[in-house]
Length: 178
Length: 462
Image (cartoon, rainbow over all chains, first blue to last red; front, side):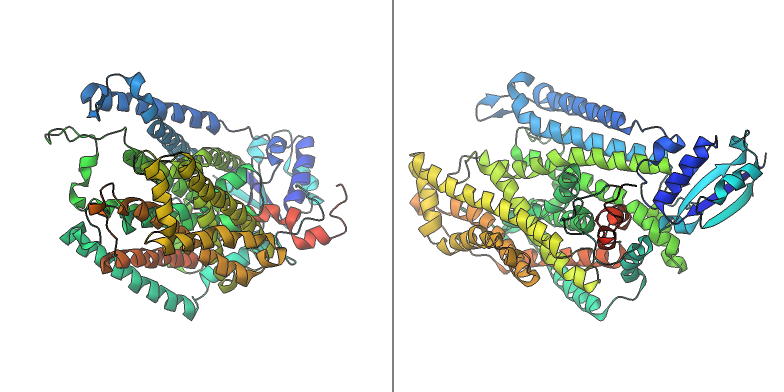
């Protein structure tokens, strides 16, 4: 099914924000905003939900903690009890103090890398992927709002044009995508 | 947009627009490199290759080519290791700790400071690796099922903690740095005209889009990574200090080591950042973004951490006497008055006295003076590690074993070589990477840019 997409380009983040507010209050659904840097406060306006990556980081951290604990228990207490200076490793509890540094490092290692990999996969940003922004200027100083007609049944194209007219955009582009 | 007090100096000078920021950072990458870059790169490469050659010779012959002897088993190698790790502490501190404290001035310097960190940790990692001597059996340090008899990794050993600390620090810093680089690579990608450059930056930018949701994730990931990296920064040098502190050598066996090493690391790291940035801002025309105020902020950090280090030196001296332990007292007396007095007093002058000069506003805002002090601090911090390591062990318990350490030319060549390699990496970074977090800088332009702060609308509510 073909879909018509409107790209409204702005030269300033605050102008885009007030324009988005106006459109949304008129019942328009803005599907995406592309910007060179994070526009603070845009998410609630266009209905972008918060991310749960922080929870993921915590879970990866817990995994690291568990792996480090199990690993060192196995290496040092079960598999090969070392006797260093007459102080053998008889139990995990007796040795836990010496295991804290590595447990901490490994927790951080797993949390950081797990989160970073999840972040890249969620964004679908991986080495060699083609650029996904609609206009090369959106990584420089332009801010683009994307409105899909298929997501706006209540608002006609003419009505959208009228709403956008006085919002101070610098360019308006319409594309038909298959 | 976040407003700030009018009396705060603007962080971005002049009348800059978003596009100007992009232009200013991308121009040096897109244009031809100045002649000076090629000259510096050639020098760094030659010095670096000499170091690589010396390392190969060392690995082929054995670590007997160093100036070590039976009494002094650790000298330049570990000194260089600790020195480089210390230098590698500024980058992540700037990007992580200063992010948590919402210090906006970090944005102008975090990218290159982090790059510096990563390259410094590369150099640091070289030293323990070559200290193994027979690098090809390095896999013995892994807990692999084996038939080597009682050869087994000791997770109780601070040396192994160090392996984990350094490799975690390196890889987490690398990820933190790269995640910040992706949007900036996308900016260069979208501007690139030449096909090869376009292809390269497309690969490097991972197809970054700049969608609102992606930016939300980006900011959260940066924040969480900063939260993870902050205790990491402190843990790494604490663990490096455990290498010494958990031993029973007089002069090493001190509980003050972890905080004292961390402060020293931040101290030397910031000094290296100053050395590099003062040259870079000039060479790449970034004076509007990294200006006197940034230098002053960093000098204040140097002053504070330098004072902590100074306090630690004096506390250490006092405790050695107060402990009543003869060996401990002698170790410190010997540092100050023994055959290595010159190293001790160089360390004292460079690290205790020189940062105190930063109390004078005129001096800490002087770029030339800052550059001079930053070099002095780095020399001083090298001597600190040398004093701790060599002077503590050169007087053994039995006077018959007393000895001196004289570096061999391989000792010197490996050290100088790592400095060369470090500059090879840094110069390549400055040539091909965005040296300023340009998209992050745009977020503070309206709040901290000079033209915005001075406009009459700035303090009006709108």
